[in-house]
Length: 161
Image (cartoon, helix red, strand yellow):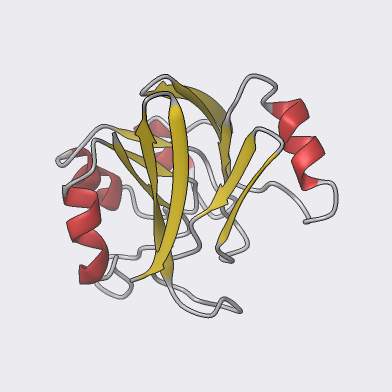
């Protein structure tokens, strides 16, 4: 199972759009996870035309994103893997413990907010931030990610777009 993971798109009509390099990954995904700061719900409509979408609220999202179906946190099961989602996981120190407490049954926690790619699998919990495809900030590049699920196992991959 191929899960496209994206966050912090901060889309605003034609002034800031998801880059063309991201779309082949979204188009070929079995499911799309958006970890918040969507800003424009039209991008969720575009993604939903390609695959089922699960989205959480970001700090820059308004009621139209909540109306689309976003919640503060969520737990989904895809390919037998439980995936928790939250926009802001807090500072790096103590993150693993906080996420384990927030999602005790999750194998993966997807988050965003910092725009910094993060892919660390340790002690049975994969912490995964795909970065941002539209706004690099302090990250080395704009990015998104994939979660590959097969035979009860999961692996994360982050790449520039």
